[in-house]
Image (tube, rainbow, N blue to C red; front, side, top):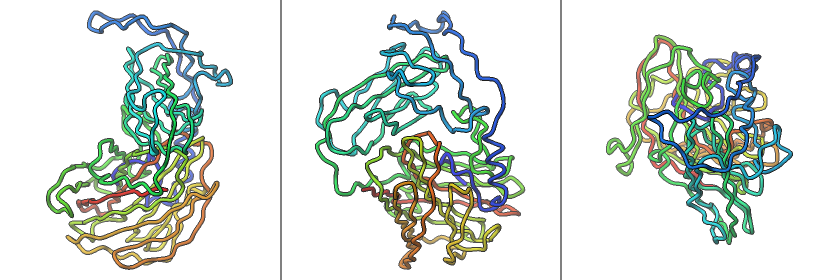
Length: 406
C-alpha cells in the first residue's frame, strides 16, 4: 500500500494475524527515556535568545514502550497534566501566524504555526478550548480546523526531544461554518506520508505497526502533478514493486482536524495500469480527537483471504476486516474509475452509509465501534496498495480526490 493512517494497522493478506501482531507491536516493556538538560550550543549551532526557562518535563512516551501512537494529549498550562507541564513555558521560539489574536474567523479555521527548538522537535499539537484536535511530529503546522461558531481559545504547543515546551494562545471568534466544506485536490497537497509493515526509521512512530505487511518493505513512490493520465492534468502517481512476496504500502495525508464535523463524502477517481496485479486497493478516512479514533476503512479485496473476495470494511475496535457482500472484481486496466464513500460519525461509532463505484450505488448501512485511548489527532485520508504473491509491479493514479465534511 501507500502509506498512512498512520495507521489502520491492517492489510488484506494478513487479516488473521492483525490482532495478535497489533498487540505485540504496541505492547512494550522497557525503560523510559531519560531526560537530560538541553546541551549547550556547539560552535556550529547558533545560540537561541534567552527565553523564560522552566525545567524540562520527563518524556515517558516512545514508540517501543507505549501502547498509544503518540504522547497523550495534555494541555500545557493545566496543573492536572501528568506529569505537570510548567505554566507559561516558552523555552524556544513558537509563532502562530494564523489565526491572529482577537480575530474573527470562519470554520474551518486556517491554523499556521512554526516551532524552532534548538533540540530536535518531539511533536506539536493544537488545542481548541483544551480539546486536542491536531497533532504532528513535524515542526510546522498548516491545516484546517473545524470549530463551532463562538468564542474560542486556540492553543498551539510544541515539545522538543529533551522535554522543553513552548506554547502560544490566541483567542478567536468563529463567526460561521459553511453548511458543507470540500477540501479538493488532496492528491497534490503537501504532507503525504507512507509506510509499509512498520513506520520507517526517523518517523515519530519508528518501528510501530503500520500496514502489517511484509517485513521486507516494497519499493514505492508518490509522484504528484502528473499531466497524463489525468482527469484535469493534475493527478498523482502511486507506484509499487517487490519484494518477492505479498507486501503493501499505506499512503496518508492529515489534511484537517477538529470535532465539529461528523459527516463525510470521500470522492475520488483512480486509474490502474494493470488491473490484475493488486491483491487489494484500500481507501480510508480517519478522524481523531479527544483521545478517540473513528476509522472508516474500505478495500476492494480481489483475491480473498480471511474474507472472500469483495468489498470489505474495517472494524477498528475489533481489529478485523468485515465483508459487505458487495462484489469487487479486478478493475479494467487503463480506465478511470469513480469511487464515492459516504460516512458518518455517530457518538462512539462509525457508520458506513453507502458506496458508489462508477454509476452503481450500494447501500452499506453498517455501524462499528470506534477505538478509545487513541491520540494523534487529525482528519486524514488514506490510500493503500497491496501487492499479490507472486508480486507484479503496478501503478495507480489518483485524481480529483476530494473530502466534503459537514
